[in-house]
Length: 330
Image (cartoon, rainbow, N blue to C red; front, side, top):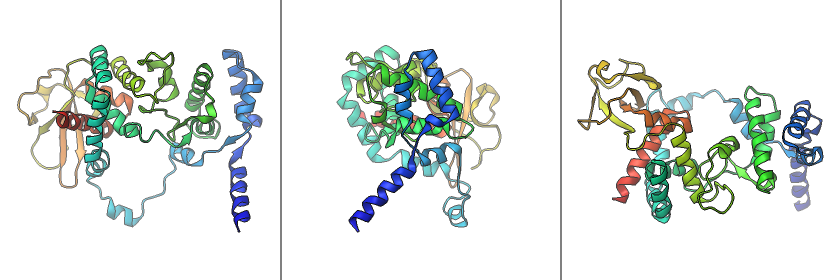
């Protein structure tokens, strides 16, 4: 029986392994890497001759979803999406661990905040949501994942070809075996879950060891701050504040981080905290709860967080977690 089980695992592995060196897209990709970046055919072909096909990432990226059953519709009704999101993202443990993480790297956070102007709690919150403060940086082999997403047919394959190119160059430059790096189902790396292109564009060697490594907290903290600053974060400006409105469901104005309003044009909407010291255009962010809609004014810095992940719920979870971490530190 043990021999049968062992052979079964070998058989499954062989079914998953794929030789991409015969793939037309891969051949063109390799030729391009040789021409543009002086790689050797032999080095690249050795990488691509034995790729473990990553079916789960491909399914997730391709948008293949099962239709919701009646049971799921009953479990997850029309309203309450934010209740569910908040329950998962803003746990007491994540708040406590965020405060502990900030205390552990207090000096780094202070230096980074002084240099980049991004409050420490927002950096910590992003790390908390992206990788649970480094506790979950991903389980997927980044090279195999990016290769699968680059060369299997789906609408975003060109994007992943670019990311694969960046990852190979990054690994080669830092003398890392690309087959040994683990990350997310999309190929994101480290505590801040940077895609390879962002790793190169925004990564900071903050601990000055001669290389950027987002597996190291010091580099990850500084790199996230650099990313936000370069995408428009304004030092000392507000992020968001909750507002009041009449009723329990908000439909008066369009909501979302792409739509900006002058506050004077938004009749019947007022900050719950009273005075809110932000006089530029705002976004309206609606959070769907089971019994009502929670409404917020969002400033430019809130929009900047959505450049990290293009989701209003994500940005709000960062904002709320940051606020809770800050309060727990006081």
